[in-house]
Length: 341
Image (cartoon, rainbow, N blue to C red):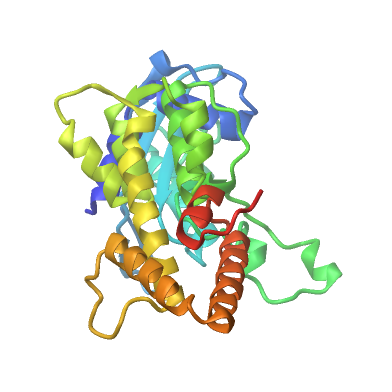
């Protein structure tokens, strides 16, 4: 089991987070699933399916997290499936999970009926279930954490070849519930869930300045910070969480400070490489040394007016490229000497 699987499962084990996730995504924020009424359920959905040749085909599947909720109905099953990558067969996979849940409950009822011999007629005996027996609904929610947009199917029909209209009318479709965190516009009421989604989105979009302005005095639980770092594969944020493992809450702005510094170093290196200051075999040349060399070269070449003008034109061109790439204005001015305002 990967680190992401363990951390995400532990995060959603909190019934308040779990309830808010399903209430927000499936029920438009209505507080219909109550955290205090959620109960643990067996995550093993494995079962055997008998073929026409009377051979048992064993299907093994363990859900990421399952909760049983007894509310307005007798009870319902809510299943959470974590996805870090796009799965192009996901609707079929979800349909199988749900079917295994239904099949297991039916199989349990059949075993009990056979043991107690409670059949009223031949039809009940052959089916193994009594006419009045009912099973409980299963709701599966797929949470996708990836940075790439989900371009996979969202319902069973999306996996099918093109069908004529007359055929579509009789096709039994199976839509799946999907939360794509990178682009979600849901308003979560649980603070931990809201902060997690906020961090993931802003890290993917590299919106450091926005985070600094909005989260200067915001403290979040350590597991929120660490999970956001693991999901986005952000080594600096993961390192920050591990360095402060004794603390229960961490400052969100401080957690992204090392990441901001690393981005600054990468940007500086990219710019220096664009300018061609580093020579072959000088990959380890520090940015400060490279900048100083650039200044020295500029002064030396500046003795010749034509060369100096060429250098200025080159700086302007680089500044324009950096601006188009979204670099910070202050950084552009510092490295090129071109004033942007």
